[in-house]
Length: 148
Image (cartoon, rainbow, N blue to C red; front, side, top):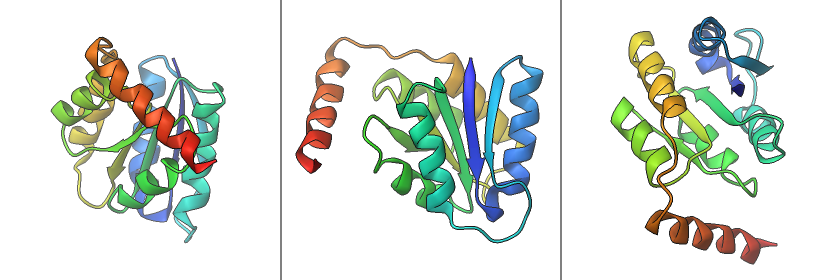
């Protein structure tokens, strides 16, 4: 699977560890940055990951900032993106099963490395359930069209 990954400075260390984990699992990883711990604006990196997922350049995305909240808000401004800020593997599974989330966001300041890996694994291993949930995804897509 091709995964787009990005972070701000607060999530940099976690992003680096997750990127290595994803590559070890055999995924093709598109790292959009940041590439060091210098201060950057999280909306820029979130938008880059979100655009790559929305355009089909990556199947899924992973974003990390201090809390995961800022990158989730920014990524969700891109049509076709359903970014979910999660704190445990069950939330990651549910974001895929019921919401067809295509980007997972996490807080680098709040999650231990092992838990972050478990979250990413659950997110990537879980498929969208479809069925009654598709109707709800269609309504989200309609909301995106209202903004245009």
